[in-house]
Length: 308
Image (cartoon, rainbow, N blue to C red; front, top):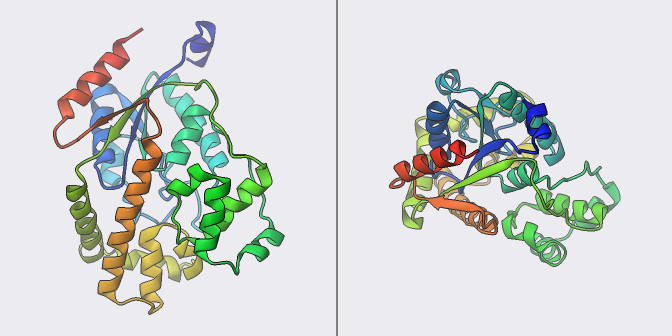
């Protein structure tokens, strides 16, 4: 099918489901895939790692049997999975789905992955700079964050200001490239962006309840312990997202169980705010409340896919 789009100067259509954490993106993507002969491509920077199942809210085996999901479990948690690698692998997946005359549905909350994949905003492979890391490692998170705000304001809006590893890596990338990567003027695809969000007070409560449920009913701590037993260090675990960072601190004795829940809830709410900030820059996104707008979403997809 790729030759057809090139011959007639058409861009293949894709659906993009995005939004803050815990808003129901995955369930919507599965629903649309069932209704429109689609397959789902995860755009989540943690779901690429094997073993990070509960903490990253991966789809269940039963869900993947109903609807194929891609870009999940493609890397070892000790690997450093890059944006460039994601774009390369996800592009091949999308092309394969299109060749089979099905609808690619990108679904996730990692804005950098989505922008790089859809718009061709490329992030070259940036090698580690040990000299720079040595210079930065003794500086405070606040100091590193202030420098990042000056040098890459957009990245600073969505990065965790307390994650020293990611702050140093972000500064390393800016230093290496000399400039912040920009989006290409034209996408390789014809995307329909469907943004999913719910009222803040509802989302805040949902975030807290989801954390409690994962810990008390899904054995998320057991998952973290298994990762450690398999050779994953606490330091590396702290780099793999909020859930794993706070569980690592709890397992090391740095936090009580209740403090872990409370601090993780607060940090996740702040993360959702940063996700909103990133996505609100994109004026091509149509925003919906999935609790009330299911039919409107369906009708928009019907119109989008039916246009020649």
